[in-house]
Image (tube, rainbow, N blue to C red; front, side, top):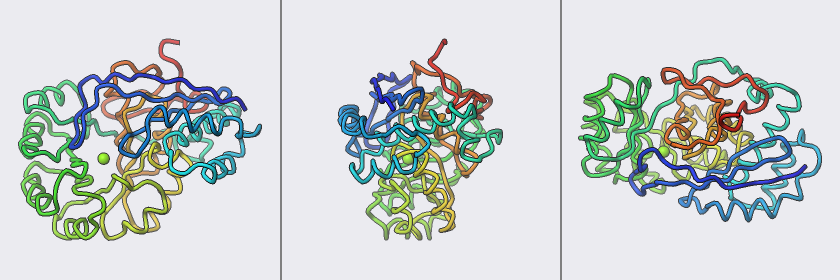
Length: 334
Ligand SMILES: [Mg+2]
């Protein structure tokens, strides 16, 4: 199999601010394995960027063998040779699934034995901004059924209040570890007034006892995301949360995401499927697993002004998978 790649500069519609950072341009890597396509959405927070992805791809590109149907063994060989580098691995995993499904002339969800026609309600993320801008972004977003408001800064309760003033849709919040445990409990008690669905990553992921305390006292579901990478991280998180946020770029792709979903279920946890800032390629790859999870936060492509791909439809806050073979994604305008 032949592996090729190129970088893409994804421009954000608005500067995307969360508790610890702001992003205006995201450099991702599009990977092609024969006619299959995948995307690496590296995150500096997890030690990756476009350069580390390319280094990883260069190391493995001649070692993929000739049979794309051996996805499991190709990926386990890869994991033996290279630790972490999850977004690079995810790109290879996606491209292999896309390639195999294209050769079989079926969509990826069908290859996985999943239902591709269930409604995939995704949240739309409102990044940290002035109260006026946050209201404006929510109004402009249109008719989403769920908004995810980024919090974890001083005036965040006012921010959620502002968003609530302009929408009756569900609101979930993500503090991206921006609070202390005491602060989280205080803020959550204030946020409840605005009818919050759940709280994502209230505090530092290392503070397990703090997370347990918040979960026991907050009276609202707690979802964890930061540093919860793969299925082996799940047993340690039991008791600290009600659910986990899986992202293909964190875990290494569709294969590992499936394992995580099953491990999470075995531990009685809810499952959210999230994303990084990425094009329709990475978002579609996650969306094919959408029927298996409780909460979808697959809006990375919608936050981008120049998505080079298309194929995933959005209608009234619901994603619709294409019935084209593979991931169902094609270069825009072709
Ligand atoms: Mg998050």
